[in-house]
Length: 219
Ligand SMILES: *Cc1c(COP(=O)(O)O)cnc(C)c1O
Image (cartoon, rainbow, N blue to C red; front, side, top):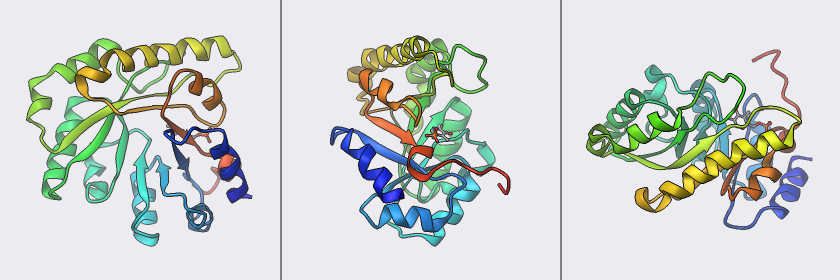
């Protein structure tokens, strides 16, 4: 079932679009089912769970941290995380830089733009995002690399609203892309990735459409 779902979604994506299979709450067997048909990009939203899975599973998996990151947990993923999607402060970048330096590597990050019109706790407004990009502090963080932007639209049936929200992120991304050498626009989930494709996303994060509904009871 998982393999079938994955193939179906991939058939709708141009080859240059990265599909991050969001495996949060799902067991290792489910991840292996996707892995065994060649899938390598997986997303988790809790550092502890991701680290347990990293340790148990093949080492050529690219692990994406898609959730809100607590600074005191960065150290657990610093040696292996492939991309951190939801960076929202210089303080966090400073910590990522420090931990990446300890591991003698550079960690790729995306800045999260707050696009949801509804109250949402996470993400930067445009001005704060630009302040981070322009800051001298960022230039001194040699072990982090901002490779693009990420955003989450409101969970709603109102497609016009989702279009508006994705447009904001699309516009900002393409305004900044050349100047900052961006490569990655992470936008679109199970319910809205087809709309995100219309807004030139090149990385979608899809969970339930691949692995089925999540059961949070024992999580
Ligand atoms: C859970 C999650 C997803 C995937 O959600 P689905 O609706 O199951 O596709 C994508 N992005 C983030 C940030 C998430 O937390």
